[in-house]
Image (tube, rainbow, N blue to C red):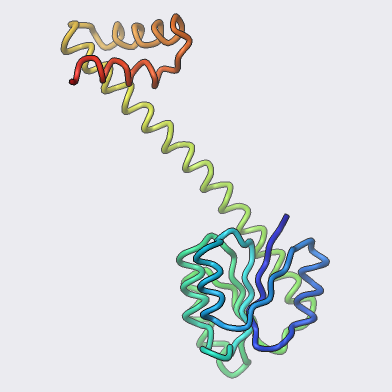
Length: 187
């Protein structure tokens, strides 16, 4: 389920209704400190909407902090008088800035856009993590090949074939075979 936080000193019924219509489970918070504690323990929120000013702070630093330390999409809503300044500062962090009063259509579009971008980034992060796992596996296999070449005088193709054949014969992964080779020869 999609999850969102609304951080505001007042009840934001319009934003709450838009999020509800988009299928979000909503948590309402009223201060920056409360939001920092919540996002430090549970950073799995899709969107965090900050309606500035908050009772304990303006909200700019909170938006920067959340954007830098979580994967949540952040929308910052501020007064028209500071919109340009906040937009200049927060856009650098990937925060979407809206000015008050924002109409329903603008808020709805911003929520959809931020959520779609968050999902795209989440997919890219998963792919990136998968690639790092494959790279680590390749490093281990190459290290095992080097060991076989050094101690058993295999050529690189022979070492590769040996690891592949051992993996098939023992029904283990190439990584497990490589780890076994490394453990055996590098005590």
